[in-house]
Amino acid sequence: MVNMTAAPRRDLAATLQEFGLERDRMRAALARRAGVSHTDLDALEHLEAAGSLTQRELGDRLSLTSGAVTMLADRLEAAGLVRRRPHPADRRYVVLELSAEAMQRAPAGLDAYHLAIADLVAGLPAERAEIIGSFLEAAAEAAARAAGAMATES
Image (spheres, one colour):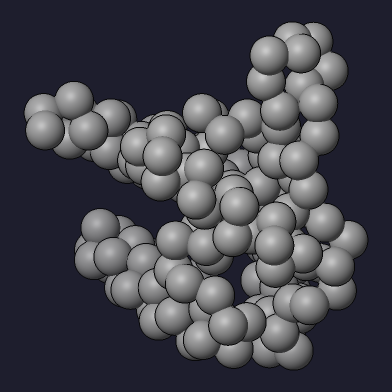
């Protein structure tokens, strides 16, 4: 468990970067184990987090063209990892959602990672969890703004 009292002013930006790099390394191993590309894994993670997305929404999140996201969706559907469903409010669109098979095919080490994170969260006092949660939300928003700015600059 992380010692929360030692060096309380440790460089948080460096720590956040270190976490990101190690998570990227874990995700590369996960993609290899699952037999999917990094982009496929990114799509699956977005669908896991959002529940379902239109192809346009997924393409925006992944910075993919409409043609590329169509090929991605075709590939994931053919692999049995996603399903296309009619959009509930607009029949011009379809939504993509994870299939039950996708959840069952998660590599073995993923559960251990999720349990380790859950244990870390459970061990935090409520006030620290709130502060850390706020920090991570703000960091995610900063990353989203930077991604959006970089996407419009190209």
